[in-house]
Length: 113
Length: 114
Image (cartoon, rainbow over all chains, first blue to last red; front, side):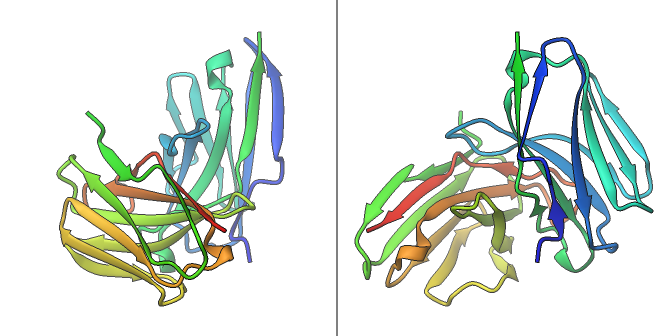
């Protein structure tokens, strides 16, 4: 029973354009949402997060949007760069999960130059 | 200076063997985690320790036993290895047991059970 879903396994974008990665969740008790980035043969690295009391958080080229009523969040990368090519994991925590991160299956982003 | 390190990076072993994976963090964090990434690429929490005390213990076979000798180390011992244990195991740490504290992951240990 997946509580965090990333329905697009892959996304291809041209350099300079916007990348939009989507994530849906089912557990309304989640308080905190995160995006992690992962390169092959490395561990996930933290990218950006958002609390359930906010609807937007921005950090440089990365912006996360949260729509609580739709139980949906998205990550926008503008402009996309070839170095952004990686697997992006959406994660949630809080409620019964406590501090454990509940991950989606990931979306592989490919940015071509 | 690796913040969260795991040894070994690769582990190939036969069914029925017992093996251990070690994790060390030099960040001074209080909380450590083990996650498992299975063949379908799902990353799932297994255990969490806070200051050497077990605080999260998900539905994991009791063949898996975490041990935290001090708050900088969280080792994972697996008894009687089975084919289904083949996965990548990631250790992580965070400053405190608070959901807003970032979790820092190690590079992973790829376990292959033959």
